[in-house]
Structures are given as C-alpha cells and as structure tokens.
Image (tube, rainbow over all chains, first blue to last red):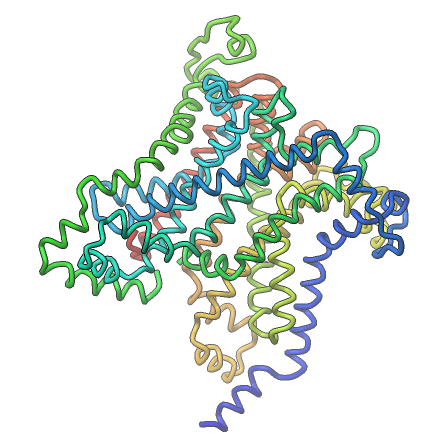
Length: 285
Length: 316
C-alpha cells in the first residue's frame, strides 16, 4: 500500500513538472497583481515621474503630493463619507431584509414558495442599467433626486435577490433539530430567529454583504444620473472623474483617488475571504 | 446541492411526517409572508414597478418635452421598436454586444479554468500568491480597474507601450484594439470568480480518480477533458451562465475606458447605447425600447439556466 502511495506521489508530481507549474503560477500572480501594483506605485510617484515618457517600475522619491491633491480637492471628504453612508446603509438594510426573506423560503413550506425563488433568481438577471430611465422618473416623483436616498434605494433592491439566494445556503445549513429543540425549550419563533438563527448565520451575512457593499461602493451610473445638480451629495466615483480633463488627465491624482477608493473594498475582501470562497461555492452548488 | 444537504432533506421528511403538530409549525401560516414582506415591498417598488414603467415608456413618445411637461405623452404603439429595428446602428451595436460578450465569456472561462487546474498542481506558497493576486483583482471596483488599465495602456505615459515598443500607439483609437483593451480589463476582474469556484470544485473530486488517471499516463489536458470536465459540469454550467449575464451587461468599463462608447460610437454595447439614447439625446422612449430588448435577451438566458438547474433535479 505504502509503496503504491510513493509511486502515485512520484507520478503525479514529477519534479520538473511541478517546478514549471509553480513558475507558471508565480508569473500569473505577478501579471494579475501588476495593475494594482502600478496603481499604488503611480499614486506615490512624484508628478514628474508619473507623466514621464519612460516610466520606471519603482520610485526612489515617493511623495504624497497626489494624495494631497485628492484630499484637498473640494468636498472629497464629503464624497468619501457619502459613499460610506450609501454602502453602509445598503449593507445593513439588505442584510436584515435578506435574512428574514431567506429564513422564510428555507424554513417554511408555503404556496408560491418555488415561484418566489425563481423570481429571486430572475431578478438577479435584470440589467440594472436598463432600469436607470424609469428609476430616474421614480426618484424624481418621490422627490429623491439629488439625495443619497436615490442611491440607497435602488442598490438595496438590486442587491436583495442575490443576497437572499446566497443566504439560503447558510440558513439551510443550520440543523432543523436545533429549531425543534428551541421550540421544545419554549423559545418563541421570534426569539429563535434573532437569538439563535441570526448569530449562526452571521458569517454568511458578512460574506453576502461583500457583494452588496461592492455594488453600492462601485456605483457610478446612479451617482451620475440621479445626483444631477447638488454635488454635495456626490459619491467617490465622481471625485475620481474630476481628474479626467479634456486637455490632459492628471494621472497621479487619478491613481491616488483610485487607490483610496479600492482600499476599503480590498480590506473588506481580505477579512471575509474564507467565508466568501465557501459562500460562493454554496451559492453555486 | 451538496450530498450532505440532500441527505438531510431526505431525513427531514420522515421525521416531520408522524407529528402533525410539527407540520403546521413548519407551514407557519402567515409567518413566512411576514418575513418576506420587507423584501417584497422593496423589490416590488424598485424593481417590478420600474420594469413595468420601462415597458410602458417604450410604447410612448417620451422626450425632453414630455419630461418637462411641455407636451402630453402620446401612445406610439410599436413605433419606437420599428424605429429602432430599422436603424442600422442598432443592429451593429447588437452584433458588437453579442460578439464582445462571447469573447469575454470564453476568455474568462479559459483563463479561470487554466489557473484553477494550475492551482491544484502547486505547493502552498505559489498558490497563496496567485489566490491573493486574484482576490485583489476581484475586489477592485470596476471604475478604478478601468482607470488603471487605461493608464497601463496610455499612449504617452503607460508602461505597456514602452515595453512593447509601440511608441504612442493609441489603443482606444481603433475599434478592435479598444474592444480588446476593455476585454482584458473585464477578464482581469472576472476570472477570479471562475478560478476560485472551479478550484473548489476540483478539490471536491476524490483524489483517487485523478491519481488513477495520472497513473494511466493521461496528460494534464486529457485529465481535464475526460475526467474533470464531466465531473465539474454542473459548476461549469453555472459559472458560464453567470459570466454570460455579467458580460452581456458590461457598462462601466466601456463607458469609462472608451469615453462613453468610443469614437463615433464605435465601441457601443447595448447597455451604453440605451443610456446614451436616453440621457445624452433625451430619447427616453428609444432608450427604454433598447432596455426591453436587453431584458428579453437576458430572460432567455435565465430560462436556459433554470432548465439546467431543473435538469439536474435540484430542489429549490
């Protein structure tokens, strides 16, 4: 038996083969990481080195000038805060609403349950951009144009179907026996929901939230279409676009603003990375 | 569905059957609807109603005059659609959208699957490096990804032209090179999803199966074709359809990288086209008609998806 193992190990990972594979993986990692490296590098380069015909892949005199330009740009702090408010509200609301809905469709049998699930699936396919036109009129009629609400509400609606679909797997994973035991111990349904189920599903909620957070944080179309005259309600992507100028783009500023915008998502992503991978697997299965 | 959940479902039924009281507990009367109420309210108001409105506007005459209330709206019947379908630009945009989305999907799948297989053949350190890099690309917002790739390929200051010795060749000037540039960015930010999912799928294949194939002298390509693909088919189908849906709807990348659809609209895709029609030239009804066409195409993709799910006998 053990000799077979050795043989198998030998056949499967012949040394030169594995070294080639590892070299390939490292090259792929470098290529994939390169754009992000270049972004951060360019953000720290002094202006002369960014706008240079012979860009070097390093800098000997890092400077914070580009970041200074970004942060002293009119209202940048405000834009950042607005983005946080929008993404934060969407994450919290969609987590709560999706948790309740996911519980309903996994823990109960009722009429139209399957129909609803199919609707949630279909809803994920709806092209957000195509609905910009009617949403614009809806927001105008609700008096929400130029407010953060006009960004929060649509993103909430678009993040819900996927969040429900994904949370389903996590809620399903909590044994039914636990619910029965809680009922036997006299816990009411509400109590079970919030004091037992909620904490157990919480890691799944966090993983799901990443997607809502990213969608809301990245949004560029709604911010561009619904915040038309009151720039104090603008979000980060608009602050980024300021550095694109018809005559000459301020690449240092663009890269610094891009870095500032990417960082929170990256941190969020790395924190929930493990949950994310298993969560996506669960949603896909 | 994993075998574990399938077993649990199978177990649950006979347990629930003998106790009638418990059955009613699980049915719960109005409780599920109470739990669903907030979700349904939000989706109804902000998804279903706008879809209805989209359809409605596509049958009306709706331009700046109607928006400002200067003129009453008038019913156009299929007028907007016949105007759209007789416009040759619409057909070329539709063709570009389909070809571009197909190219994006194929490239994303090829890169994602190849790297997933590669991941199974390396030790922990290179695997961690590639995983982290992919995670970084995955997390990058579409808009910053677009700006960074534009900068990399910038004719004056970008490193790519220097390395390739292309001088001040502009990538966004030509139609195909502009599409290629956007494609590279789209693949970069969407292959991680495919890679991570397929990698998880390969890890779930029993090691003996792969070892047996390797012992029989099968090449890596043969193992992929004849062993992994059949076993991964459900995952591959889901990943493919998910990619189709995403890539068909690409908006930000095209809008930012080709500055709203390229020179003379050469890089327009349906999504950007609809937006430009509505918000740049105030032809809201034409934009809505394009939106309806997109919805119908994606609905067809969804039906295929549902058929696949049902074909696999998955319980929803």
